[in-house]
Image (cartoon, rainbow, N blue to C red):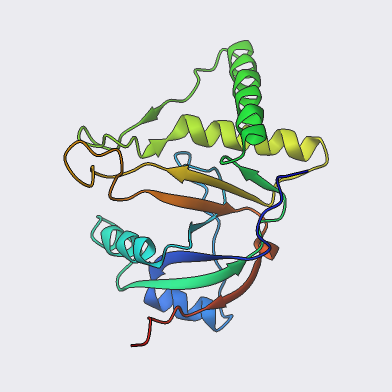
Length: 197
């Protein structure tokens, strides 16, 4: 009764400029990320209402070895979340716990080791390789689909980065992340404009 979401939100997607312009001109489309370590499972990833963080991500990613981002760029989208697995809503947190328990039981029955969250490197304290979280969210999405109520999107808040100041519990890269499963949730794509003086 009280879990309705805003009808429209803005999402920002960091990517390569050439790819972005092709998407904007409808010569290409966003691609689902399907890595086994994706934080929110399979989907098209957006930073909710956070243009600056999307820019930072695109720049950071462009510096990685074998990055597909040659010229960092950001596209904006108008998004309706639809049926959202919203991990800022307690009922979905409870559902995710149930999904974890069922996944664990299924994997144990098949004698398969449950994935773990880990860092990509020894100094990765944010555990950016979230194989466990990804597996649990994918399992939760499968359960919802089997029940005839597939999720269109996944939404979660992440505490990430270094403390903003000594003793802080606010961090430099906090954000709300979206994974759009159903591309029909993306109602429009545009170039974000900077604030005019």
